[in-house]
Length: 359
Image 1 (spheres, one colour):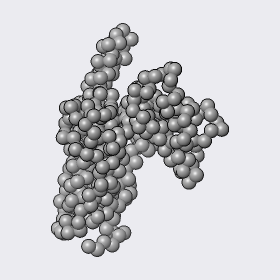
Image 2 (tube, one colour):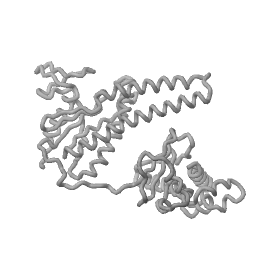
Image 3 (tube, helix red, strand yellow):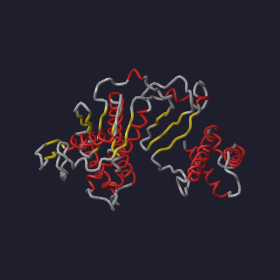
Image 4 (cartoon, one colour):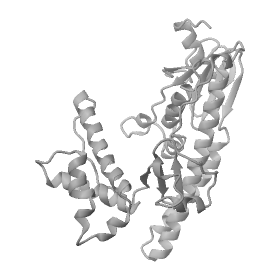
């Protein structure tokens, strides 16, 4: 893994120094990857299999080609490929499927390693082994997308659901039948306690009198807390995405642009609320839901505008600033609702007044 990173950086250094040389596989292999370049010095590079080194060079070439295409299309103005560092959060190398079944070779030792799940007997595609800062290794295997049949679509009447994202409660749902559910209602307090524990560790390793070995232990404990928070959020995301796609045909998801909310120019919330909001990773949930919908062909996702849905009474339409209260009390008609349920209901009503849906 270290050699793959070293080859990647060497190819990037070669590209920066050699302005007149074309960026292609032939030049990378001739001047960096091949064994002939390491006859006198850096002979340890030859101990790493050629395919691993070659894959690292191809990754750099792919990065250049992708960014050139984006620049040509006008998506970006300029780009800069950075060197990989040992201190990066993740490191990886490509594992070629043609070497997996061999009893002797570069990957034969993997079968003797204790794994959380049974390893496959064979690989259909080239995969990637990822290592994080906690020295956990993950084998990422590409899979063919399993698309469900149309006969598995939900048949109940309330096939439209609206989501209301929040901070104290991650998502609140409301469908046509009037059923509402709350996802992650107690998760904010749990994640808040973990963030507080991380802050205490951070204050400890920031002290100048702390020795290097002690600082390393504190940082490693902090990474474990961060990984625990990530696992909690990802588990909630995956369960909610699967539940929505299995039970509804139309999903109304607000855009909920958290980055604009926490920027100093537009910031109207305190730092604690902003931290909780960012920890929920609403954008990552949106991307995961869009991907999960590809497996369920009957699922359609609409990105809607959630403006004033939390301030508007879902009975009479009166606009009222509810503040930080969890309960919405309408001063006009006297209706009392849960704040999040009222917002989800307004999102559903606004969509139904502007769209015509047929099943």
